[in-house]
Length: 70
Image (cartoon, rainbow, N blue to C red; front, top):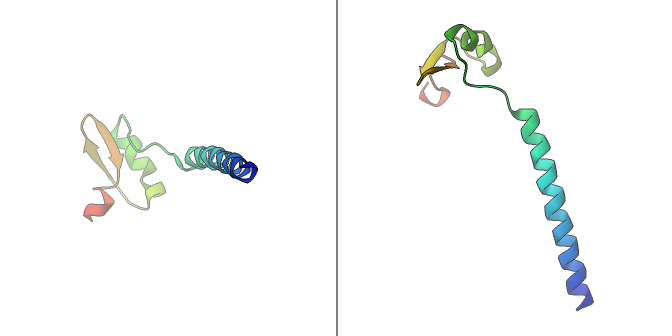
């Protein structure tokens, strides 16, 4: 029984550790993809290895079109 409780404690700590580390990685990866103007989106296009911008609703996104459509 003690081994089982020790295992559960270990598992709980691992889940907490992984959860915290993933959130930090997400913060580092995030960059804006929607912009208010076409000019802003075009300026950021180089970060996505593309050129131009396209409209998405009332916002603008970098690249002439979505990459999966190219």
